[in-house]
Length: 194
Image (cartoon, rainbow, N blue to C red; front, side):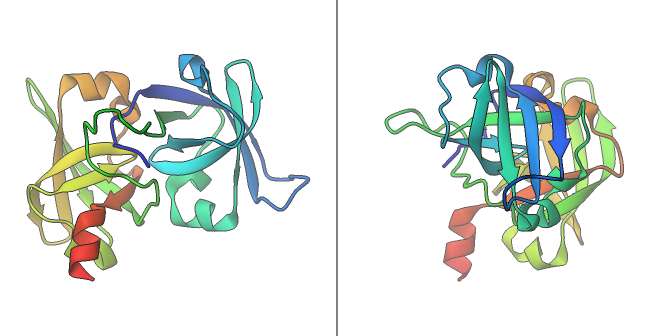
């Protein structure tokens, strides 16, 4: 389980599609200081996708992904040199700063508009039709693993606002119109609706 409070970013160092096991892709990511204390088998959210650390080497970690992960998230589109948001899993007894995030991406949205204002950046993204019922104004949403509040909704578009700190420590400063983002809607809303 995660909170959507991204700790920093990492860099994709290698992507292997010809793996020796049953995974579709092995991706090596330099986690930098965020690799400290990480053990094989532990969970790390990359762009909001919960992945398992399978091999460690200094500050780099190999993550295996099955075809379902590469098809249902934007991780299948990553290239060497790509920047990913990092969040280590929540420890029991720590503060829950964002909202409950599982790292189980519901779908992929597309950035449609970026409005830069003096003290914030507002981002409008297209919400897949099947997810629109779970996205509510002032509700929680995770975009590429970042816990955010939905500011506004207009038809199939939703907006979030990012403060300068969020832009500084996440990969959102690299995003542009047309980029894909992972969306995880609020788990509480999903269960209530069900």
